[in-house]
Amino acid sequence: MSLKEHFIELRNRLIKAGIALVIGAVIGWILYTPLFTLIAEPIHRVNEERGVQASINFSGVATSFDLQVQSAIFLGAIVSSPVWIYQIWAFIMPGLTSKEKRYTFGFMLAAVPLFFAGLYSGWFVMPNIVYALTSFTPQDVGASNVIQATDYFSFVMQLMLFMGFSFLIPVVLVGVNMAGVLRGKTMFKGWRVTVLLVTVVAAMAAPGNDAFTMFLLGGPLLVLYFAAMGLCVLLDRRRDRRAAKRVEENESTADIATSSDDLKNLGASGQP
Image: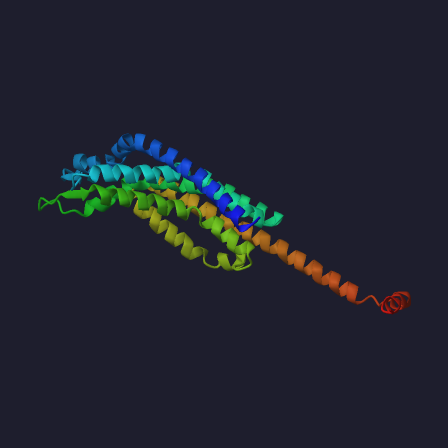
């Protein structure tokens, strides 16, 4: 393809991704009110169970409108993510080899559902995290939690994105291993630190004695992590077997002497 054809292809891909984003943003705009009601539920829970005044504040005249626009774009990007991720892959696909196409397509098929699973996990634990963090507000001095709506939405959005990208770590580990940067045995050496970090994060997300929520959050992360390391070990063994086989073939070929007929043929082919 010429440079002009590349730009035309890029334009078409961007248009398709933009259309999907707009449609997703419209869906996000429609779902804003019921979604914000669910997001504000932990704040109402603080009011009812602790007797502490907690509220979400819209400080400016246009704050509510700005927040709805941001929410619509954020939800639109999430809803349309399979479309624009595919458009990115389809644009770079012609420049890849058949092996690279299989790898990238496999990574995309694994990454998209894992990312959505991480988003759901973040949504699932968000009420407990909000309830735990607001528990540090002093109750005896009449303090209250007046939370800015934009700050609250940013907190929820960052929490969900953090969990979404956390679920992509196994895919990244497998990709790094397939690139030959890190071996599976090296990953296994740090499993104790990983288990500790996942347990601490899960305990923070499930305050009090809610061990079930802690298990639901930390269990999938640990399963994905160890599954990725096990897959990396299997890939390393397969590469090692292939490398050993190539060495044996080279050594066996080097031990065979060139016959006199082959030498004569080589000499004859070199004559003008």
